[in-house]
Image (tube, rainbow, N blue to C red; front, side):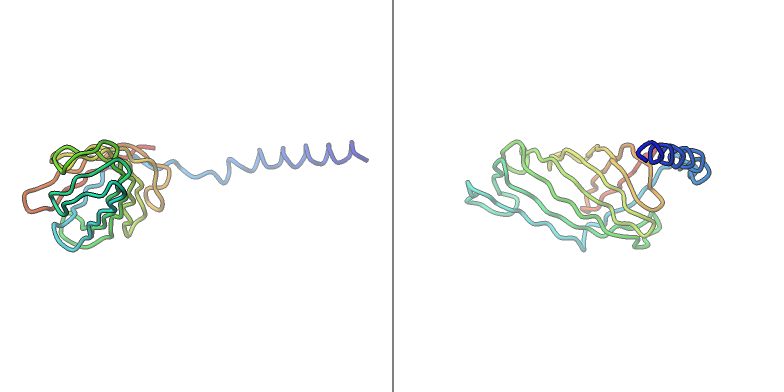
Length: 164
């Protein structure tokens, strides 16, 4: 009896191996996606873990283990709202706004799917470069890099270079 189970199991595996290619999807094509984060309408919160900063706002002194949690609306290049970005960042190098360094994880929840990213962040830099680690919907199976460029009006332009 055990031999019969092994034979049936082998036949089932062979059937799956033959059937699998017929259900496979065409890999997604490489694409570039550009979105805009307006300078208003978002949230920015500091989680000040011990040791606590004596100053707040832009005079906050960050310590390792502090966090920044932010959200922002996302628009396409014509100004139409297409989603929201949500990010959590952890301070990895202490200092004030000009010197602190953070590591961030974020999701761009867009009407066409989600784009999941990581990025190192320093507030003193107007350009942030990061990694796209994956996506859902129209971005499923894609990864790559992204760049966020901050502008004087507190908006930013985010460009995702996605590849299969």
